Length: 66
Image (tube, rainbow, N blue to C red; front, top):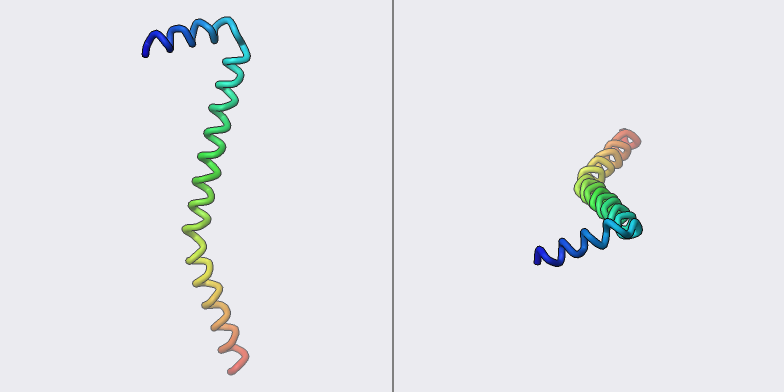
């Protein structure tokens, strides 16, 4: 397996497009990971927001009844 990496590194040293591609893929991976984390946080917050919305709706009903 180390022969593969040695050969790949030797090729990458002489071909800049390989380094550019690896750099781009690295940042794409991190942006996707960041989006997944934000999406997960958003989904975790939804039940709390729904509960607060229901509480406001009930308070509005009580205010108009009184």
